[in-house]
Amino acid sequence: MTDAIFDTMGAVLTRWTMGSAAAPAAAMWRDELGNEPAEAELRLLALSGQFLGVAVTAEPPATLHVLPDIPTLALPTVPDALRSLVRRILTANKDAQSRTELIHFLAARGFTTHPADWMPAAADDDAPDVYASWRDWADIAAANAVSRQPIGDLITAQNWDDFWPAARKVALTALRRRDPAAARAVMEAKLGQENADVRLRLLALLSDELSDGDAAFLEGLAANDRASKVKALATSLLARLGHAASPGEDTAELAGFFSVKTKGLLRRSRVIQFENTKTAAQLQRRQTLFDGADVTSLATALGLTPQELVTIWSWGEDKAADVGLVNAIVQTGTDALVAAAADLVAEQGRINIVLTLVPRLAPSQRARRTETALRASELRFEIAKLIAGPAARLDDPLAAPAGTALITALRRDDAKPSDQAVELHALGLIVSRAAARQILDRLTGAGLLQGDPRLDMLRLNAALDDNGAKP
Image (tube, rainbow, N blue to C red; front, side, top):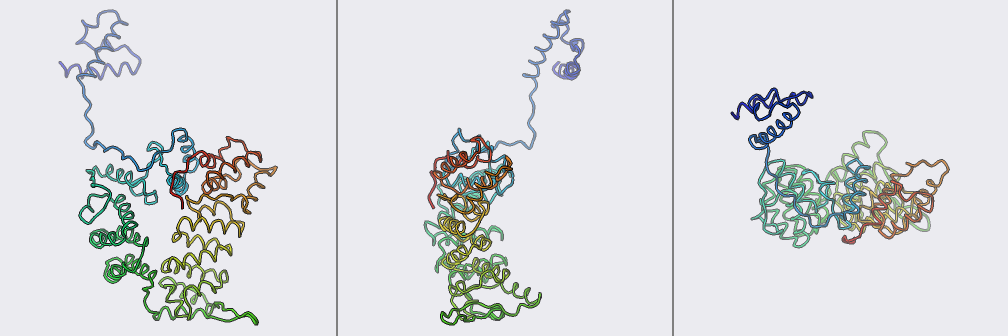
């Protein structure tokens, strides 16, 4: 009987879909439906609904699996009152970089997004560390795997496999800052079982709290690792420790493209002079040599210290040489040398060089160089945010030339409603909460409407409590 009813349901549902009466097709329920047409349709609806709801059970597809609960993050979500504003900013800024900047800004202020508004993908390496458990959740969900639950957040060689990749990196980072030697010991024990890309990412963690105690481990990797890119990073980290190889033939050849000259009659000073770059082949050879150079060996070959080399370098005279030297500083220079180079080029307004040095600078150093660069040049806020990062909290950027230019542009008679949207968004990312409130007052006083969508980032900044760690 059940099969007969089930077969009849196809015809019944088809007739209803077409707007026709279906009672004539339900012969097995003729007595129950009665002879009155309208009443018969209502009775058929009730009987068919009961049958489909009780006797028919939809089977889930074989690929369906139960996902684990979304983990709770260490930071609270953005207050409900501000979620709509966050969603609007995410929608307005659709490129990946803009989304990443906003997510990092929120994390720096001590907040995370609601999972319904934004969640990272498993491969989203640019997401703040606080989202590591969500990244691993996405990895687990995609792989239909069983979640591993480490006991505590302290990673060891014994519980290494209990951590999924993103959480493992975060745990190693925390251990490195708390106990550098213990983190190195864990990496010595377990790094070899990972693939080259993972080894490269985890080895980069040693740049935090780098010390001579890491030298033996790095020397082993530089000599024996099976991936050339891991060897190169280990060699680079050794150079930052001052363990660079003695100047060899390549370094001597690179040094031949430069000479140290003395200029001035009364106040004698030394400068770097560029030599032997008259042909395209010579320029290409110099660039090739720069790619494998370390700054200490180059300075030694020129009879200088690395600090002297940076100080007397003729910045801006040869842009290709500037790029080569700065890349060598980033890869092989000490933290002190990177900071000194950043100070020097920021004061000269050489923004492209500052941007190259940014990955090696601490948040507080980035904010300070941003302020210097803003004062020294007509640097746009769009570029300033790339130097400053999400933890800048600048107090008075409108006093810089970029601020004057922004106000002037907004007050122009032919200004359009969409003008300066990028600049205003960038400004909202880099200022402190107090400065955001002051800037909003000044901009609305200059004629912008309080509900202007260009002010969304400034409005979020001004409304959001600052519970994050200060740089």
